[in-house]
Image (tube, rainbow over all chains, first blue to last red; front, top):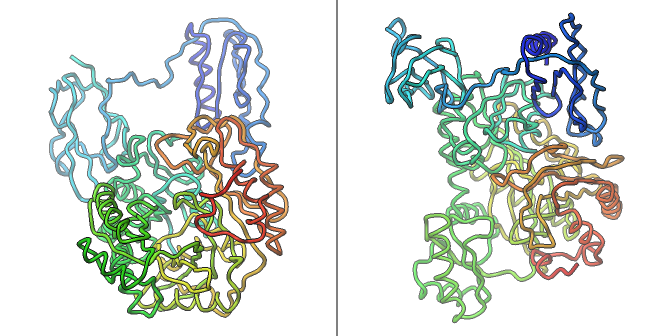
Length: 178
Length: 446
């Protein structure tokens, strides 16, 4: 995890009333930003960054244990960082996509907003779509696969640029159900 | 050489291929199911693409998804590993059609060797010894009895499309053959959607000895000696070694030459394995050919010193084999134990769960190929093998001693494994004397 990302987490906690935010990437990159003394049991690989109330925070260095299959003792080496106590409110809501609020790609391929280059996009932000309406194309193995909305709603954001690759399950649009 | 390779697999073999690619300076793309996002192969690869939900049938076995992943990442070649789509001719064909190199043999070879009846015919034509039996499908009980009369009992009825021990039935008399024939047919029909079966003489107490071969696109085929994979449970290999305690230099040369002859006859140009039954009298018979890299390839790597995966990738890129037959020498002895998340005390039933702690052995002559780590979830969706421990020593005795102390060092907590079973086998007299055969485990008390 990059320093800027940790800084963002810290900012997020500072501007909210949530106690802590934990982000896990892989099993060795786990960062938890917390306001008060964390739970008694701290995972061996968790790095805890305390956020002093309303003070500028120097981002702590990220020292994830070197990942490797071979060293047998990896994973037990990294001791838990000692959490400094802190108090104040915090925000959570990292990048949690609430379920059902996005249209996800059912296949791997290349995302296209329109049936052909230069053509009118299938949908624009603000459009009301009904279930079954084609919202985009994902091309795989030279086959254009039309992706349909699975519910009625309003498109509130497009999350992928035209002609970008997408993977299985990747959110393509945010949709507000109606 | 390729600039970027996609690995259409998971687990230890995906890692193994990524390691080879890294050493060759090739970029790697991992594909994964939603359940495997936090897998080591995903982590170690340069790029990764999610291709579907946890069930293999909707992810690792969907050729369109895998090929699309190669397309969006601009990979030039696909390494299939073993299992999944490694011996799927349609997948290999689809790769070619999409302008991708399939790292393996040509689709028609996969097809031809995947069909047991056809494979046998082609090996007979190439002068490779086969077990006496029907020269093709057997369609009726009467025909089956006729074949058995010529070969002599006992006989084994096998599914043409079979593998892994399914669709096989042994018969020791005409009476037994009648029911065995019908049962094998029914089983084959259910398991492989084909009720084509054939009949062979059943070799009692045989060893499973296979020859590793390697071919390139310039007409060279070499063999890298044998692996003895006789320690099997229900046709699933548990422990493999090279060289075989039952093979001397002369037999190795003859078996190797037969394997190379068969491979040359079909224009084989990748890594492959020719499996033989070795009878107690020293006669050997072609069983089948595996047109892929195998789980147990590290024992051959240990005793020959060649990196089979790197070689396989290089020949797929059109390069010549980096060595000649006369350069291949067998040094010392190597053993591999497959550590599965299975409970040997409970009929080897799979034991999915969370690996809480892992400590891998080290020291001289030990190699570990594994994808597990503390917190790794052994999923019921996939194969139960979680680690391979390979021990290499100057002699078989040294290799056994090394394996024994390595398995003493090994710690895997959270899920029961086959480790205690391996320790019992290694400590047993018959194994230490090298007196093993494919039925050894069935009669093994521990």
